[in-house]
Amino acid sequence: MKFEKRDIILIFAVLFVMIGLMPFMAPIYAVIIAILVYFGVKVFVGRRKKIILEKLGEGLCANCGEKITNNKCPTCDKSNNSA
Image (cartoon, rainbow, N blue to C red; front, side):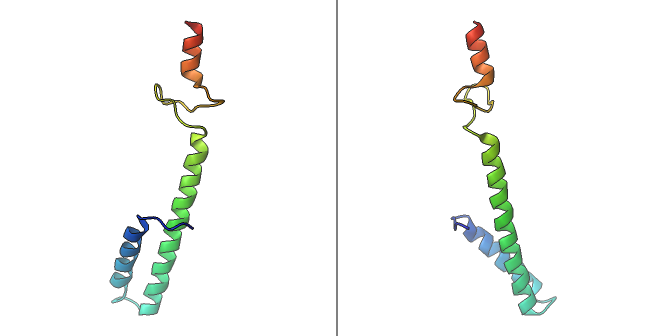
């Protein structure tokens, strides 16, 4: 897993969750839950990014927003060829 700038925000959020859990349970359990939350969020975001990149493929058309396949937009190239 790659460390990015926004991970600092995630670390602080998990730290605050851990501090919030400490009055209700033993500190070791709060630390374990905080670590699980951190890695759970990292895995979720990583899988989500992968799915989005697969959906985008080669990119999006600037005119209509359609997914580009074979370096051509299926919508715009049809209208340009017929005219």
